[in-house]
Image (cartoon, rainbow, N blue to C red):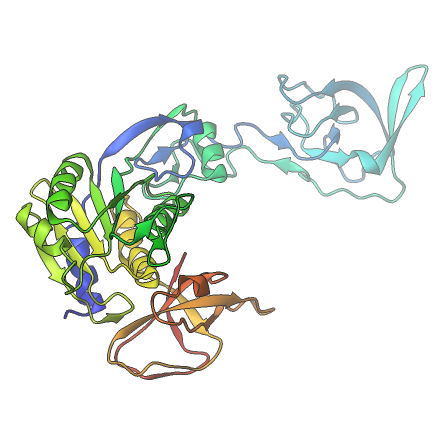
Length: 401
């Protein structure tokens, strides 16, 4: 058996980008940016007013009242302040009136209607600061500044930045074509009649959901029985039409575990089989002649999901250009014991703490078939094989579902 660290190094050595594609910005949410984004112009492009009020030219002392000569709305060209003792009513988001350098918020004055026109009367004792409530031109960034780098997830904030840069389309990483295959004669999909000796098919849809949740791929799901000839025929076709295959079941040493032999017969090169980990020891990984990544995961549900999260999700993130070199760490909220000389993937719940500490509590499962015990957990914490006792307060790598 190889170690978890060795298994990951083997996988990452065979992972390559799946290419780029161009999408409309509004269709790019959840994808990974594949280009650098440059500012179309400085921002703000003008001295922008940040408060409804009146634009004046600051002086010391200020006059008690100002004649109001005009109104400046957002979206209209800047008006001009005719002199240093007049004011222009101005709205949030408007360009600052030419000749003005200060904004008095509307709450700090009143307007009186007089025969000679409207007059702005300052609140008694109010002393504004020169330059207040003005978002200065170029203070956020200059023209041609780098706003986003390739490799970031595109979310609502990134959409706003892309549009502010004048982009209607953006280059993103292609998502791979993925199929998740459940193997086993005992599996029956939900909604179909089931016998006492059978179990429901759940692993493959769960793995597909995991990839979707991490916004890495929209995976197809299929079920194949434990028949070597059928497996060979179907997998040959799937290898031709997918960038990634993920199999669940049929990878150990039982008489119905045909997957490794079938993959070898199809020319898929095995890079490793069996990893010093629990759950998921019989995990298999290889690549086809065409470069299809093949992850064959043990069929017990906790094993399948743990290996999919630890290896498959990280591999697809890497292919998308996301930096996975630094793990997220979580602190144990309680002591834990694990005696086998194996790396442990332990499901855990997150405890909220007032000090903001990222703390998790490991949970026991009743064998790796006990997927119901995963309900309510938030991910797995990876405990190294070199230890047997793990104390509350120690930090270890965390992989959230």
